[in-house]
Length: 240
Image 1 (tube, one colour):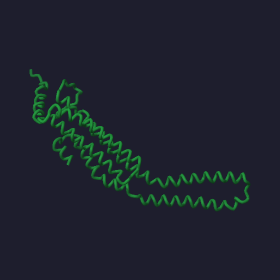
Image 2 (tube, rainbow, N blue to C red; image 1 turned 30 degrees about the vertical axis):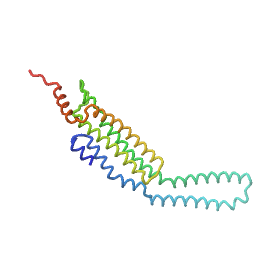
Image 3 (cartoon, rainbow, N blue to C red; image 1 turned 135 degrees about the horizontal axis):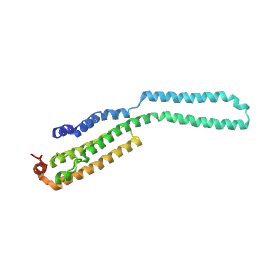
Image 4 (cartoon, rainbow, N blue to C red; image 1 turned 45 degrees about the vertical axis):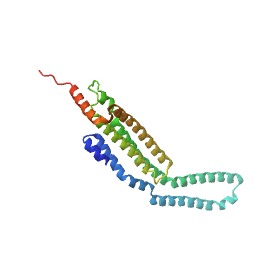
């Protein structure tokens, strides 16, 4: 399990907590996907009842006004016809709103689940943002505000690889939410998630390639040497 591997190698890292959150979302993803795709029966019943009530009311109104229409003038008939057409358009819009209401409810649930994954992807990006291989490999003068780095090149390689795996999982989980719900807006949101995670993964793999090009197959050995060198270069407290 990815969360176990991260916890064993980086037990105090915030990335472990993010991965646990991702695991929790993944465990419930199939259930949430099934709930999104299932028909909302009570909502369909209410929608059908309201639609029938509107149509029956409109039919009853026509039945009441029909006998009176025989004795009206042509101008009054035209005005009544315009009013009837307006009422018919309004009723059609109301029925259409009720019929499509279930789809909007499902879309809102799917978009909420997808937005949760999008936020998690940005959090992962924040964790790897300061993990620059140049700072670890080539060092340089640090300032008081410089981020602290205590990772060897090998550990940095593992850290970045874990981030890339988590981003890939986010893209796969997002696809589950539209498996049983083929809505255009939800599918577009999933495509945006896949593009986001793919772009972030490309940035991470650029860092990994820098590590591999510089350290090569002897990454663990050279990591130990660089770690010892950085420790030796740290300023020692003055003794009086």
